[in-house]
Length: 378
Image (cartoon, rainbow, N blue to C red):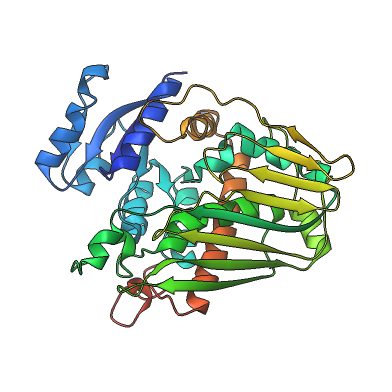
């Protein structure tokens, strides 16, 4: 099939990662870039023009991008609070949207976007890159090895250089630490752990967040406890699958158990992520860019490497290649079933993070009086 011509909204580092990963698959071609600033758009395009089969169009208005007949899909990595309006405009124009996590500020906004996508016959896909990695799929297939799940701990903590700006009293603060821009650690890094938990075990019965609040009012990090109490529900939701068609095998059991998530943007941790069971433990060195999956077998006291060697990483990019391949396949094949499965996952993940966040008083500007109120316009 011909490569999918796509555009980008957002000119930060993760956009460069997606472009590099997408181009490495030969399934995508960057055809347009949006930035409010013409100089920024020009500089951004110059990085890719020499490798492009045709000149990359520069747009300085969203209306112009939405009207571009040559664009089939748009990758959106703008500030979190703008995801809803940017995605809505592109979906209404009949373009597929790949929306960088976190999808939207609220669950109401996300539900509205999915309705809009269906109305216009296009797909909305949230970019949980780690769930498409070969070793994450292998982890899911391997859950049955540990017997009945009795607990788990996931960690994603990485110091952000932008926190130094917060400490220096930057006003306004960096977007990622601004409640007005729907920022904070839970929705930026913690969401990777939540997405992994929901994909592996389904929606938890309870989610309680203990945030570390910083000067901006946002959470710089924190500890999230997910409680899984309903064994029948977990067995239905927690389905091992093969790496090609996500066919459920239902071979994993789960007793009531807690899942602990530690996340931060104000310190860095090298702690592994683990899933414990009656027969052993599965261990990952990290929850994203998974290089290894080990199984400690309690009966023999031995440790087995289950992971597969990762393919060649795209230089200077995050591991987004497998995600780019799957999203291209869904769009090119019109795989509505796969898209609907990802839709359900996105809704469940946002339900968890929104509930946990609001439950401890971390409220975004769009939810407060005077802002775009929760659900307004959706």
